[in-house]
Image (tube, rainbow, N blue to C red):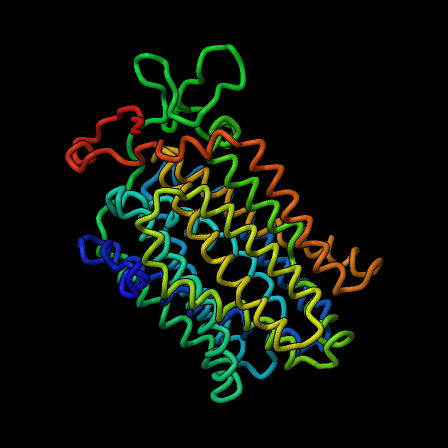
Length: 463
């Protein structure tokens, strides 16, 4: 493989269309969120001096996100996705502006931070689900892997640059300016997205005339296939939303590739979560303080950035499932190496390698989910994945903490990596047929002329 083939694949952007504008808006939005997340933590701790209060405000935001993901999954498969994205972006402008005004007051009100945090979490969850659902419709199927890599790059950039810039701004101009700049950046994001065309869900997830399902899907019963949910008539309120969510769960349970991706993702988050033990490791094993925790947190991000910038090969591979399994195995091995490392430098190397593996894993997960989910179900499948991605690491942190209290932090990290490898082996055996049938996919969008006519055709399978 030539060096230039490793470079980030920009072909989806060269093909034209709205993807470039959407990704630019996503970068700005993530930077603004990064500024705000650091600002909220600093403000709450500065006013209360309580880490418990910091954890509580994080829990409020996480709860709003979870509800937003679940509601957004249903809405994104019923409504114009552009409208949902704009609602979330517009509300973020209001939220950040309110936080700026509150921070500039003589006596900032803590309840304002909690209320705006909860509402922002909900609308951001809806908007992020809609954005994730609409991405496959913006590019051709051949560009889906490269698009997944580009989305991962924007996530990595926001995760690194946002908090870093936020810390500098808070130390300089202050909290109010930081929140105000986040509001301005999000307003630019909203303007970038306003010029997009409407993005309603297209197609239908009903089986074809023969009653056959898409490759990889399996019926859970011998009964007739379920009819598509009615998204417009009188019963499409709360009961209809619950029915739609059940429909999404059924699709995930029956589709072998989609369910396998979510199970693998769950195994990684639950068993291999060293981040929760960084403070204890820094103090008890490595003899450092908060600055060392920051170094441990940064090391995987450096690996993630390296993997993102050299991800050109991911758009050419046809073995996404195998690459996903290899990347997850790499993350598990990196956790073992980090837990057993006697020196800080070697541990940082393992964490950076783990960041490479985790980023490649995310690219493959995005590609598989986008490729194998029909457009009418993109919202709900995306919401389930995003909700799992938010809640599973929290569970993994609790498990890591309990293990650390029993065997120590280093052994807990190494043991978590070993459990991740064992779980991966079990999943690979459970879904062993995927190693032979990786070439099958579900078309996630109709042709452009079909979208214009609003045809309601079933998702087609392609080998």
